[in-house]
Length: 283
Image (cartoon, rainbow, N blue to C red; front, side, top):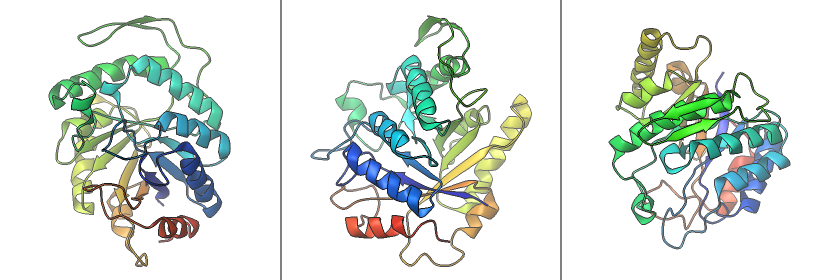
């Protein structure tokens, strides 16, 4: 049975401040949702109130007891991997071992990379992600790092204290289907977040992941699979079954508030979002 999560932006009315996101998280926990994952943007659009997702996740960790939480996804090429490691361990300890780290190269749907002077070439960002993960992985395991690469140079003793989750905090790798490189990258970690439109596409994506896991002798055991959907009015019976049958272990429902800005999905009034969350993970 796939677990159910809410997938929320860190900007827009009701979402652009930590208090609003904490209220969402506590309501979700009361209603029986399994997880809450936050987007990670800095300047998503003009005039949009925006919360720092890591600060918000810390507040959520302190205010909840059961929800699985995490950034989904954080664009690692825009962040220092050792700072991400420190933040993750702190969040994991604050939450009692409930953190999942989602990573990717970052969406090309906003102009924030240009605005902030960040790397805009997706191929270079992919190389930065791979190198960043090579630094991040041992730090999350509590191991020393001696890395001299193209983008990062790190010599660090094992970080203390360790995370609660062992051997380390789970890492889920995101990527747009039909791009195969992110899926092969995900095979080396604990989960995959393929951005796609249908259960058939999910089957195709997981075939790539499975092939890569076999070829690389990747870690054995469970491999989480997150898909995200836009909520449907009335929640028709059986709407999620095809996704479960295709291999999803987590199904996230994307909440898009009014006055959100164009191009991100169908907007919902705040009252409708509250009602949807309070009704719990139906279907």
